[in-house]
Amino acid sequence: MGQNNNLSFENTEIAFKHSSNTDLKRAYWLFRVINVNFLVKIGPPITNFAIKIGLPIKGLIKATIFKHFCGGETIRECEKTIQSLHEGNVGTILDYSIEGEDDEQVFDNTRDEILRTIRRAAKDKSIPITVFKITGVGRFSLLEKLDAKTSLTDEEQAEWKKVQDRVFAICEKAFASGIPVMIDAEETWIQNTIDQLALDMMHQFNKEKAIVYNTYQLYRHDKLASLKADHKVAAKEGFILGAKLVRGAYMEKERKRAEEKGYPSPIQPDKQSADRDYDAALDYSTDHINQVAFVAGTHNEDSCRLLAELLDKKGIDHKNAHVYFSQLLGMSDNLSFNLANARYNVAKYVPYGPIKAVLPYLFRRAQENTAIAGQMSRELSLIVKEVKRRRLIK
Ligand SMILES: Cc1cc2nc3c(=O)[nH]c(=O)nc-3n(C[C@H](O)[C@H](O)[C@H](O)COP(=O)(O)OP(=O)(O)OC[C@H]3O[C@@H](n4cnc5c(N)ncnc54)[C@H](O)[C@@H]3O)c2cc1C
Image (cartoon, rainbow, N blue to C red; front, side):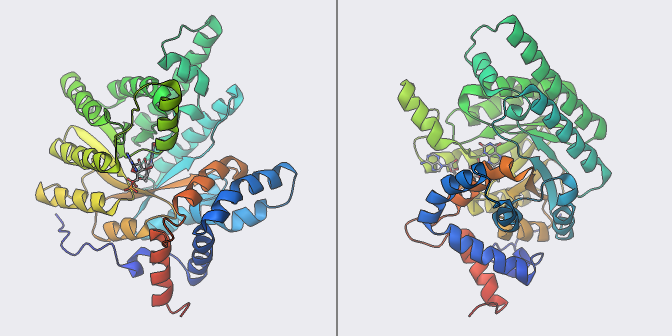
């Protein structure tokens, strides 16, 4: 069992070891641009417009922001990134990032692509976990209807059956390959349906090993309780609960909708409450490590430090397969690589897909890394530190 006494998130030499000087300089300029609030605001509409009227800007996007945050357009194009992360003992989670589609053929294609990620993961140890979104394989408004318990037409019933079949095919393949698959969490008004489907899949496939993981958004005030309730069900019915723990990505949208429709917001009253429940979920999951397998999807340094300490305090081996740290490609390498260096299990989401399809993802990353109150973003300050250490700038 390892000790984390020397765990430091400030070591930029370890954090950026896998980045060449050219990579680092590109990241430096990219994050300097992203740091400017005004550019991040005007960037998305200008980019969307330019693509719409056919300006040849895909090459520029591919060489800059896409190259930093995505692995490539296909699995094959991601191989270099997979290898580079693997050399730093960091696993890859291939994330096929198609968003907002509404077409049965696209849903079938996405299912097939997720099956390919599982097949690729089964080949070697560089991809320990896989992931997908239910809205990648089913229509959002159908899920919304199910969540609201509105009765479905015969046609919609048949459509829903197809969604369930796609999810089953993915989980069954994951089971047969011995590769865990996580189901992302989305908006609250479709999440009950996702939760139910995920629990059904766990019931079928998690008897011996954690294969299916659902996602718990701890920025919701009810989700710590759900985690505990689901664990009780799992313990009673004899399966392992798979849980990805995140704070949650749709706060503003959730609050706005609740206000517009006049129902109480499902989101915690403040950041502190979200942090408190997130850390409580880490504590709870480590307390039940044999029955709860979990992935801590977070860029929060305090939560990562806390989890590292909890593992050591509770005598849980760093390499216990039931616990993973996870960050996104191109972000918080100071956490990922320093944790991996201290022998903790770490895997990064590596988004991939056609450039146009991943644009919303890229805009969100830009938004997240822009300056707050005129300060340099955390990511930029780390890059500046390493760029200076290598004497690439004065
Ligand atoms: C590997 C990985 C997988 C992910 N998967 C998903 C997923 O499936 N579904 C999903 O929704 N998100 C997902 N996310 C995104 C995640 O939910 C967070 O939005 C993001 O990681 C930022 O939170 P943080 O824990 O890194 O840390 P921090 O930067 O410390 O926290 C920021 C987060 O805190 C919460 N917050 C901020 N202000 C307030 C406030 N005033 N009141 C209440 N809460 C507040 C919000 O959730 C905000 O995103 C994932 C993230 C990672 C790294």
